[in-house]
Each structure stands twice: as structure tokens, then as C-alpha cells.
Image 1 (tube, rainbow, N blue to C red):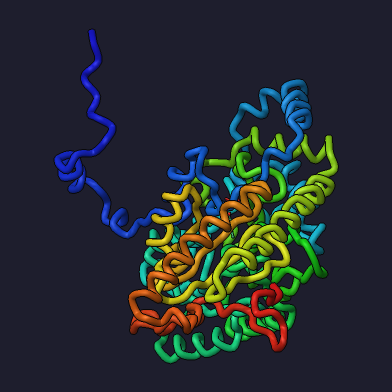
Image 2 (tube, rainbow, N blue to C red):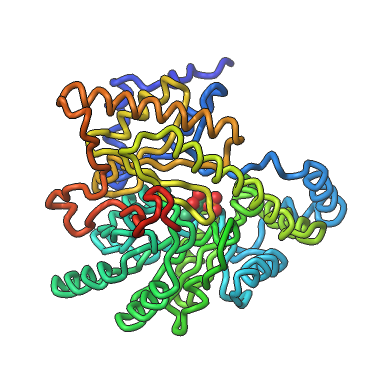
Length: 463
Ligand SMILES: Cc1ncc(COP(=O)(O)O)c(C=O)c1O
């Protein structure tokens, strides 16, 4: 008997109507992430993508990969193919403890859960703590991948400005005072303090200390998201918030994605026991357990190789790519643009004049076969329209140079067009340092203030 005909894979408006009545109300607040939207376009081989946050997996030795899989096949095949405990395998947790120790942190194995990427931690923490309308404090801009999660749980996200020293803790305190007067207590502060995605800036030590004082005075939780701490290209490491935490306020998110492989989908959370219990329940419901195969791959890798050596080689590659991008920006972007100079991580954040909308600019850039992430994807309130995130880890140096040249060209076209339309070509307009907040935006303030230190080249402010 022949199977019934399948509906066509592309939705017609009639299909949409048919299914619309079936969707849960929560799907109405779901949003696609800015990065994921672009992923399908940049898959075209002719496109130079400075959009994703892709690590250079081509630098991983295939013979090591083969040795890892051979070891699993010989020693733990049945186990690798089996379900595992929700909290993760003990051997994997020992590897995690080793990674955390490399940044000066100590974590007990029973205080951690191995997750399906760091992304799942953001989801599980938000699921455990947020009812619709509850407040989350985040940086402005924030990690674009967190934006759809916060939307889906209907959080009220208040974004705090950053400058070259990371989140402005003075503004955080003002915001907390205001929220308190309104009778609202944030459920947690979400921060990427080290080599932030997307802004590329790092929270200074005094601000880290002050943040920890503020959260302990006010009894607030912090979700510290730290995928990039080990990808440092200059300067001395700063202590993670987790290390400065004296009272169980920090929930720590780590991941193997940027130091080993995002394809393994392996991350972790370390959190106070009551929070960890809820995260565990949420994970049981989401996926029962993290892939045993991936966890054993990490264990095999740690047994066979010196993982720090690979991180060291990635650091060399990315430092050179960052320098290439910064040189290309200085060469090819017009004087009206400004950008950060990250001391580590994978991203540069650029602000353009406020007559340029980077979502529109992306359409033009794609015609030139180059992509970036428009800044709007890093805000929950429509700001960031004149900014862009540029990634330097996923492309070779020639591609970075060419990609920045092409983006520079489309920006210069816009600047020239603006000059022609307004007759202002002689006077360079100010870059979009401070967008006028609309009433809903007021509490969030402005887009990242780019570093402008006295006497220094204004393009070379520190991270
Ligand atoms: C700040 C931040 N958090 C979390 C993630 C999610 O990483 P993964 O789920 O691959 O561990 C990323 C990935 O780019 C990130 O940049």
C-alpha cells in the first residue's frame, strides 16, 4: 500500500492558517536569534562570514579525533551508546574541574551538572528562575543567543550600558535602586564579564569586586557566562566572578565549545545546591542527560592529549586574526566608525553613524557576499541598530581582510549617499555613540560606549 501524500515542505498561507490555531500561546513570544537567521545565508561558500562565532575546528588534528574514537570503541563502546546520569559522568566532571582550575577556580563535582552546551545552561537557569514579567539584568549589548531564551520565558530584561571596562556598575546600582522603589527585585544578573560576546570588552577587577559587593548586599544571583576566559591574547588574567564569590551568589556557566569543539555540544553549570536541584529537574524534562558519547570524547581527549596545548595553538591563530581584523578596520572603515579592541575572545563590536541601519546594511553586504551580525540582535528593545558584531575566529586572514574591505565599501557608500542627500559631506557625522532612548528604552540606556582614552588613538581603546 502506498503511503499517504506528504504535505509540501514550504508553508502556504493556507497551511499557516491551518496550524495557527494549534500553537501554544508561548510560541508568540519566541524569536529567532540574529545569528541563527544568518547561518542559512552564510552557508553559501562564496560568502565571507564574519557573522557566526565559529571556532576554527579545522585546526583540530584528525589523527587525535581518530585516536579518541578508537579508544572509546575499544574501552567503552557499550557505555558510550547508553543513557547516562542527568548530572553527567564523573570522569567528564573531573575534566571540567581541571579546566576551571586553569582559571583559578575550584568546584566540587557534586556542585556541577554537565549540559548540552552552555546554551542549555542559559535556558535551564531562566526556566528555573523566571516567571513572565520577572526582571533579568543583562549587559547592553548582550549575548545574541541569550535574547531568544529571555524572550521565550517572557522575562523583562533591563540592559545596562558598558564601556571599555565592561558593565557600568554605577548604572547597575541606579537601576537596582529604581527597581526597588517600584517593588521589583531582579531574579538574576546575566553577564559575560570576560571578552564579552558581542562587545569584546572585559569587566575590570574593581568592577568585578564591586559587582560582587552589590549582589551580596542585595542578595541577588549572578549567571556568569565564561566561554572565552582562556582565549586571551594579551594582558594578565582577571579572576572570574565565581572566584570572587564568598556567599553562593554566582551560577557559573562553562563550555568546551570554544576551547575544544562546539560540535560536541558540551557545557556545564556550577551553582548553589538548591538552584542546581531545579536545573537538574529542568534538564530531565528537556533531554534526560547530556550525550554520553560526547562526554566520553572529552574524557578520551584529556587522557590522550594536553588540552592546554591545543588552547595555546588556538590562541596563536586567533591573536593573528584579531590583529588582521583591527588593521583592516583601520584601513578600510571610514573615520565615522568606531570599534572595540578585544584582548581575547572572538569578537569586535563596531558603532557606525546613526544614519546607518546595520540590518539594512547587511542586505547590501550580502550582495557583496560578506556577512556580520547586526547589533539589533544583541538588544531586546530595538536598540543597537547602528552597530555590528564582527567575528575573527572563523575566517582566515585573507578572508578577514577582504571581508572588512567589502563591508567598509558598503559603509562608505552609505556615508557618501547621506552626504549627497543632506549636503553634509564635508562634516563627518558623529558615530552612533548614544542612541536617543525611546520611552521603553530609557531604563536600558545606550549602546556600548567605545573606548576613548585621553590622547590615544580613538580606535585603539583597550578591552
Ligand atoms: C557568551 C556565550 N554564551 C553561551 C554560548 C553557547 O555556547 P555553547 O552552547 O556552544 O556552549 C556562546 C556561544 O557562542 C556564547 O558566546
